[in-house]
Length: 103
Image 1 (cartoon, rainbow, N blue to C red):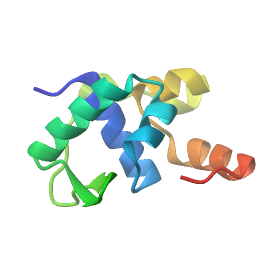
Image 2 (image 1 turned 90 degrees about the vertical axis):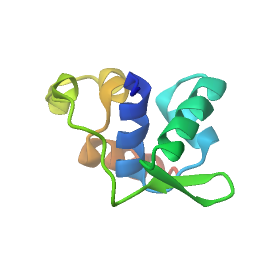
Image 3 (image 1 turned 45 degrees about the vertical axis):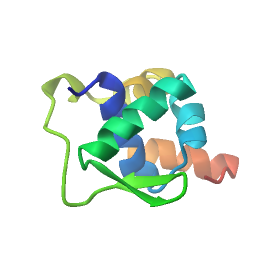
Image 4 (image 1 turned 30 degrees about the horizontal axis):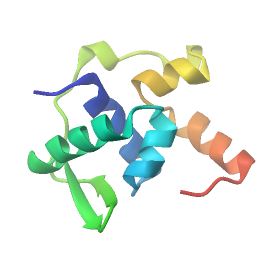
């Protein structure tokens, strides 16, 4: 069964590309053990693939079912609120670029 965190992880990987669990934990501000549990679920169900040891990315052939609850206007939300439901590619990517952060 999909959880809210599954959608957040999926959206993060969609925006950020390949990520480690440690990086996702930091970006999504969630417990590492819970995140790893959800990564395992997403991996076991084919939504994501393990590219290298500790490196995950989306499986382009399988997408999450559409969820109307996550259909929100991210442009009107604060950064903290948008991190809770997903990411706006331009807003989040620009903020990473401005800060000079790397994954």
